[in-house]
Each structure stands twice: as structure tokens, then as C-alpha cells.
Image (tube, rainbow, N blue to C red; front, side, top):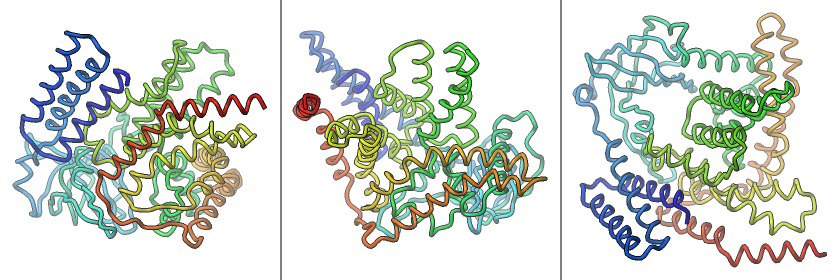
Length: 499
């Protein structure tokens, strides 16, 4: 165990413990006591284990404290209005999420000097935009946890609270008082996103335009419940969610383009970082994209300065920074957990799996199979805990679409830009330029629908306790760190090389 691993795991343990249980100062004091005992042992007889133990327990205490600060009661000024019809002046702070029959928008409501965030639920054609000043009225409700059809409890209140949203303004009416000023950067990024999505609508038919938007900037709105279900059942849903792959591809594209102009390495890295930040801002700063952006920024910094980039250290540092910033991500944002788990699998499991695939002679396919198996194995315990969906076709389906996804992302981005520029006066040309994206997205839909329709493609696992997830990850961690396993892999590699 390294000091950074002890720091991050201790912080995460403290945050997770305080997320599950509400307690006083006693566990915090106990963690500090254990940290002091480990430090005393290290002072009397210096050993690495005692030093790491001190770091772990000290950071666990810090994690408990940080989560206690984040877990606040509902603001009193607004709690008095619960279950009443109310009216507020508000600022639109989020991009509207358009559903089949409604529109959900994050707003900041104001009452005198007090303000907080709420989720505004209105009819579908409200036409709000980020940065608008609005007058809203509706029934103020407090979000609550609920049990889904599969028996799993979803902590919807905490899920919204991770973005600062504490209330729901339901059955609401909204009237725009003033539009966002031209100099508002968040509003400009939101306008750029919607211009791109309108460009995709001009270049591609549905549901391929929505799928292209999901591949490039994430999101599942517009796909419809049947197609969303097919992507979930086939284990391909991750390709329509903004991930670290999308984020790093954008930075690499910008740096490759600038590499043609003989610019200094530091200038290319800085340009890639700026493009990355803008892309995350346009697509929506979710926990998953921020984690990926932090890792990519660390990689770009290492590249600019000529330093060694260690993906494992970058992941641990990114997780620690994000938990300090918002500890609610850990226990109440499934997307963040699945993203971290998948990245851990790619870093620690993929090399070991690839070593066992020495019989696959083609290096590209060997790497593709290893990364797919590693990512699927790493997210499986959490995925079963959150959804219960056990897909038996996920690995072959992902292997089939893996070579297509980068092409689909690139041609979809081109189609969106072409549609935005030409859709107004040359729609036929926009459709022609978007045809490659149409073919690629149609192929993805074909694979998703075909694999999901196979008999026994997926199985719904009943709800189970979280300790089963911990046991599964303990087994994976043992497998990834086992010296005996690593030695076996080295011997197999040596034997393969000699023959």
C-alpha cells in the first residue's frame, strides 16, 4: 500500500461510513485515537505499516467530518413552505432535461436573503435556458428515497443533494423574466450544446440523432424506453453516457491537430486542457466527466513537463479531490462509482487478463478483449447491486462495437457541426454529410437490439446486501495484487516468448 492509496481509501472509508450512518463525535474521536496510536508506534519503532495506518485513520476521520458538513438539514426558510403552493423568483442553473411528458430543470430559488436549489417540473414546452431569470410557482416538495420495481432502494433525496438540489417544485408554472446575458459563460456553453444537438437533428433522423448526441456528449433523452432498455439489456449503455473515453479523445484530437503546426509540447498540452474543460462544460459537468477530466489534466500536465504519468496515482488523486469537494458522490452517485470501478479495472485488471490471453496472437484484439473483460468484471458487482441486470451478451456485444465507437463519435461530431452550419439553408447537404454517422449509429442500434433480443440475453438478479459487493471487490483486489498470480503470469509470458 502506498501513502496515496492509504489517504484515498481512508478518506473514502470515512465518507462512506458517515453516509450510511448518522452518528455523533465518538467514531471521529476513535479514528483520531487509532491514528495517534499508529503514529506513536511509528515513532517508537519506524515501520511502514504503522505510518500508513496513521495516514488511513487520520483521513478516515477527515472523511467523516467532511460528510457531516455536507449532510445538512433542509433550509428552514424553505422548509416552512413544504406541501404548499408557492411562488419564487429564480435563476435557471441547469440545462433542461426534456422527458416524454415533462421538463425537469435545476433552478436556484430565492426568498429574501435565503436561496437554495430546486428541481422544477413543468410541461414539456416551457423553453427555459440556463442563465434565464424566471418567475416560478408550484407545489414545494421534499424529495424522498423510494423502492423500485426490482426491490432496490434509490436515495433520490441524496442523489439530488449531490448537486445542491434540496426541493422539488412540482406541477409548476414558469415565466421567463429575462434571458441570460450574452457574457454568461455557462449560458454560452449551453447554447453551444443545443446548437450541436439541433445540428444532429438536421443531419440525422431519430433515434440516430439522439444516439449520436449520447455518443459524443452523453445523454439518453430521445432514445425512447425500448431502445434504452435494449442498450441496458445488452450491456452497451456505457457508450451513450459521457465517460473518460470521450473526454480524453477530445484532448487527443486537439493535440494531434496542433501537432501539425510545430508548436511546443507545453502549448499543445495547454490547448488540449482548455478544449477538455470546454467540452466538459458543454456536455455537462457530471461527476463522471469531472473525474475523467481530472485524470486527463494530470496526464496532460505530465506530458507537458516530461514527467512519468501513473494512471493509478492519477485515479487515486482524482477520487480524493472529488470526495473532498463533494462527498455525496461516493454513496449516492451510481455513475461516479461505476466510472471509478471501470477505470480501476482497466488499470489493475486489464494487464493481468491480457497476460493470460497470450494465445490471441493479434495484439490489438488481445488488448481489446482484455480491456473489455476487465471493465465488465470491475463494474459487475456494483451494476448488479444498483440495477440487478446481469447481461450474458455484454462481452461479445462490446467487442463487436468497440472498433466502431471511435468512428461513430468522430463522424457524429462532424454531422452535428455540419448540421448546425448547413441545416438552415442546405438540409439535403447536411443529411449527405451526416450519412456516415447514420450508418455507424444504425449499426450500434442493430447490435443493441439484436443482442438484447437473444433468448436468455439478460437475467434480473434479486436485491442483495451491500456486503456482497464488498466481498466481490475484496476478491478482485486480491486477484489484482496477488504476487503468486503475477509470478504465474510472468512465467507464462517467458514460456510463450521462448517458443
